[in-house]
Length: 282
Image (tube, rainbow, N blue to C red; front, side, top):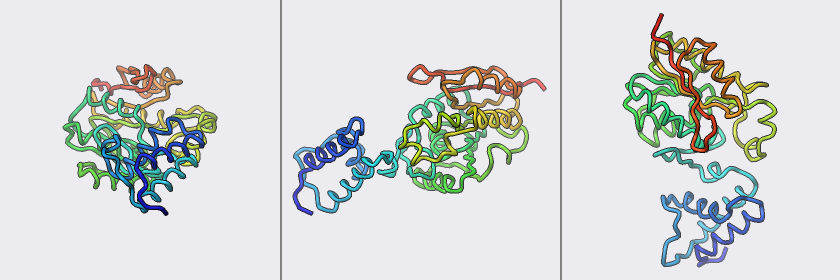
């Protein structure tokens, strides 16, 4: 490995490799790879132009090859940003998406205190963001995947935020009327939609966090039914839903006995979130 490689030349070379592999915005991704691997918060190239040591060159080029091979950027770098947090990311859990940040906003706008459960916590991103930004008495992250639960634990340690993590299947482990709020980004793709996903997603991210039966609504229905049981009177449930099935999702909420059901748009104007409440009447 030659010494004295200029950082700009290294990044331009990485961008060229990513462009040849068909990666969109190759220069931006090459800069992001370098910054994340180097632990930098800013993606701006420093001046004067530095040289890069051989070990860092090799590490960067190996990361470029992984990305060129279709591995998601956050898995290559091992980190993902979510709201104010920087979290560990790897194939044990779904990569946090920007759209899911809006789900946190929705719950914070309607319930900022009490006891809340994040169902299917994955990396722990939602639960940790709520612990970071809300005033909840208790935030609980529920996850049935042992691998994802371990990753959420690593992110709890990384952030130092107070979240209780429990192994469980949806809301089955909770007593009736014990929660002030339920939040979840459940799997919501149909089997055919999952098969049509980009190969980079299907090859690397966990299928159980994406697909939910032939109609894509199995997990949504289960979470809503569980929420109707475990919420206190007046408690709220906030879900991320598929933009193709907002009416079906709302109908499931009503069928579960929830009231004040509403669908909300994400930043792109797509029907992305569902909010409902347990009636205060017996």
